[in-house]
Length: 269
Picture 1 (cartoon, rainbow, N blue to C red):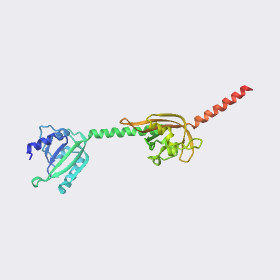
Picture 2 (picture 1 turned 135 degrees about the vertical axis):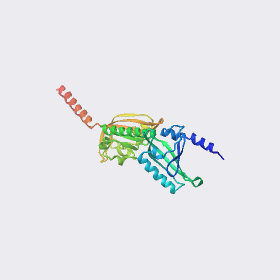
Picture 3 (picture 1 turned 45 degrees about the horizontal axis):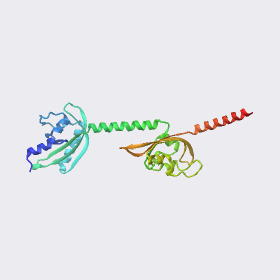
Picture 4 (picture 1 turned 120 degrees about the vertical axis):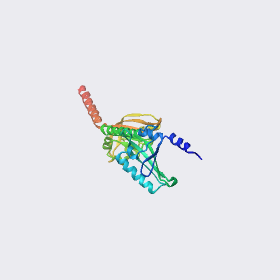
C-alpha cells in the first residue's frame, strides 16, 4: 500500500493542475502544475479560498458545481470557464470537479487545464476559415470543392448563381451527374471519361479551355475551367475546380470570325 509521500510524489509529477478544497472552497492542497498555472511560487502553500483565482463568472459556476458535488459525491463535472493568476491576468481553463469522502470529510478535487494555447489555435483556425470564406465569396469565378468521388464538398456564391443551384442542394451529390453529364451534341458524357474525375483518380490537375456545364433548369453554358488537387498528409482527397462562363468570349469570337469572312470576301471583289 502506497504511503503518503508516494501519493504526494505522484501528484507533484502530474502534468495536470490538481487542487483540493473543502466544503467552504478553501484550498487544502495544490500540486506543482496547478501552482504554475496560477503563477503561485512552488514554495508557497496556498490557504486561501479558491475564489481568489477565479473570475466572478467562473467563481459562481464553480461554486454551483461544488454544491452539486456535495449532493452527489460520486459524480464528475467537466466544463470550460475562466480563471486569473495571482497578478490578475485572466485566461481560459477546463476544470473537472469530483469529490471524495475520506473519514466522513467531504473533499472536492479540481483538475485544471490551462487551455489558452488551444483557444488561441481555435481562434486562428476560425479566423483563417472565415478569411477563406470571404475570399470564396469575393471572387467572380465559380469555385467547386469535390471529394475523390467527384461529390460536392462546397461551392461559392458565384458557382451557385451560374449553375442555378442552392449550395445545400448539391453538397454530397455527384458533380458529374448534375452539371457535367452530357456533351454539347447531346451525347452522354461518361463519368470515367470526365477530365475532372480522371484528374483526381490519376493525381494530376487539368486545364480545360472550353467545355460545357449544365444548369439546374436543364440549359447549358460554355465554360473554361481549371482543376487542382486537394491533398491531405500527402494523399489526394479531392479537387478544387475554378470555372468561368465564357459565353461572352464565344460571342466575340463568333463576331470576329464573321468579320474576318466578310473582309476576306470583300478583298475578292
